[in-house]
Amino acid sequence: MASKNSRVRGRKYVMISAVAERFEIHPQTLRLYEREGLLTPARSAGNTRLYDEEALRRLETILILTRDLGVNLAGVEVILNLREQLEQMQGEVDRLVRVVKDEIQDRRAGIRRDHALVRVEGGALAPTRQGSARSRSDD
Image 1: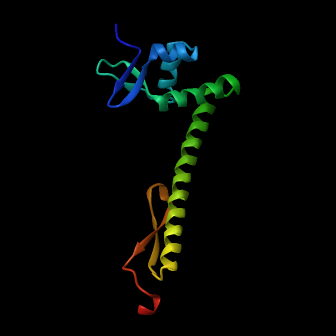
Image 2 (image 1 turned 120 degrees about the vertical axis):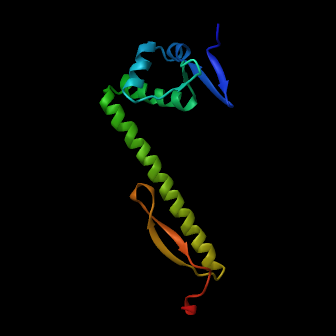
Image 3 (image 1 turned 180 degrees about the horizontal axis):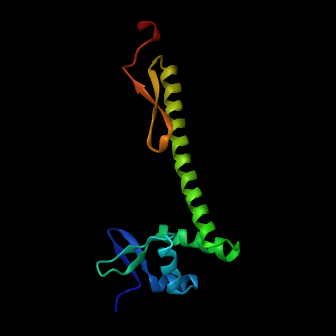
């Protein structure tokens, strides 16, 4: 009999039966969440559903929303999508903060660079450096 836990390429995976037991839900509920697009477990070579830590955290969120807060599955989908968008936006903000910090360090070092805003993935604007380091008086 196969183990309910396994490692694939350094990541730990849990089979559907172990997940169902751990979270006290029926395996069919997990399959429903997959059909609804709320969970996407990995698959073994034999097509067995395998859940990694990220999928288990997502499942915990789904269960909190449905069990504790009474959110229906359509609402769960909206909340999860908004959360993903928020995480992407936070990543964009973090990148922009790094660019501004780099600019501050450059200016403190006496380096001036030309900048332009360019459209990046998702339609966001991000600064990019153009040209070589030079003084504004060189123009």
